[in-house]
Length: 403
Image (cartoon, rainbow, N blue to C red; front, side, top):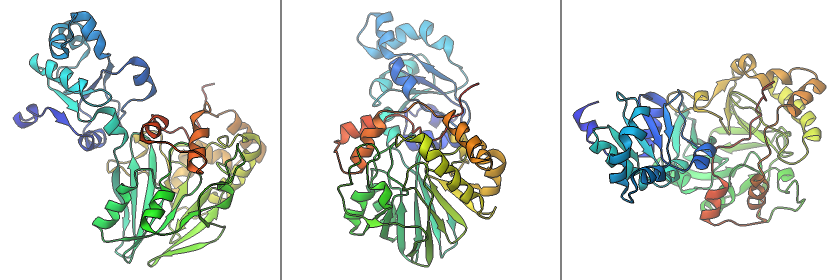
């Protein structure tokens, strides 16, 4: 570490994400309460040494309300023995305020400590854009929200752009399009999302274009009430032109009844919540796993008929290990055939696949029912409630339970 680096007091979230991908030679001290840490934490492509020690324990040890003084007093016995002295320490709290004081106390003890500016709130709202392909005539940009494991895509050609699965911070897409001189002409959701609030309707309104969705997903699957917004129907085999690029819709029910993937120029599959890098989607978020699993089996078998060279671009990831150092989450279909257990199971008979699915479902997140209500326009959420609902990583993928 250079002298200039030793004097840096903070890292912003973009710097942290860069280091998580390229240079994981640091450690983390998370001073949030233990339940908050257990529910959601920062993780890298490689394991990062991490210590969770709630800041109020420093105050208890020191009997001092001055956080900096409490750290100076208590750190030699409570913190320093658990740190690796050769590595810088990133200090984390909910909003970056308390952690700044903890980092200052550690620096007074000679520790190379930096604060995460904005804390976990800023990490949760960080977006990263990575180029998937740029041929001049076609650009595909993958926009990720690393803390959530959510992925959206922009397909651009001839000055026009389609936004697929936009997340709720829609200004990210408007700014990116404006910076590249693109007009947003299409806004599409591959399905009605349950893990996060969609920005599709709002972005379409702001861009003054149609919002596209399959009609089967414009009904809340549990409330059985229709969506309260206008949209343009997506249907099987539909082709949408974005400049010189063509997006062909493939109706692949299973995760939802209206799940749609988009095959771009017959080479790139924007797969939504169907096929991920390390797993496949779960068919229970509509409350009907026994009925939807056979549909999902048929849909995955259909995807298996695509050419080996088709590149799959999912809507989610579970860990940063699924991406590369540029922050891209993508894999050729032939690679997934070899390494993705769920896809391998899809090649087996329907009954065997269904038993595998039903035996591998993670716990159902109750808040996903409310998120779908908001996404169908049946309920509303202010910014505070939206942040609460989106706390933590998505759990849209199947998780194999330990035997």
